[in-house]
Length: 191
Image 1 (cartoon, rainbow, N blue to C red):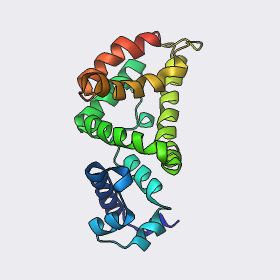
Image 2: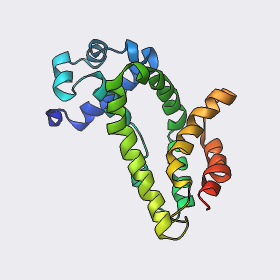
Image 3: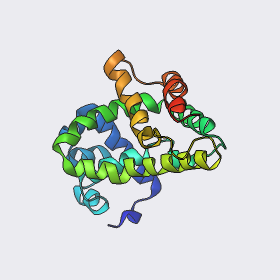
Image 4: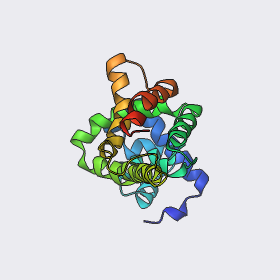
């Protein structure tokens, strides 16, 4: 696939349009025709750049994510988590991402291609970054190498984003995430 044919600005414009459409109509109703119309491009251009809707959606989510676990290293695990929350909250992205991910969570069940694309493009890189962050914590002596909670760190973090909306009907904002990290994640890791 020749993604290089689009300028970074044009690619960003396309990704923004995809996410806007996702918020408006959801994954199942999103079509390549709608993306083409919204972005004044041809379906052929879209299919030359991306294999299809699952890859386009996954790459749009990845591109528009303002902070990545792999980009943060403050020197302490507590500092790394605080910086992740600060960056995400600063862009108001936590609430936007939560709404999108809830909608995509439903769509994943009936779309194995979407599930695969999200894993490859979005989830796996974040889990890899989180694991590197946790390994730095082990190397610095902040976390015991045999801490049983290490394997569950991604689950705890994803759970925080999903559970608050389900239980309290409110998004997991920066204040909630900071308190959750201090009360649940960091103690579970022995920090």
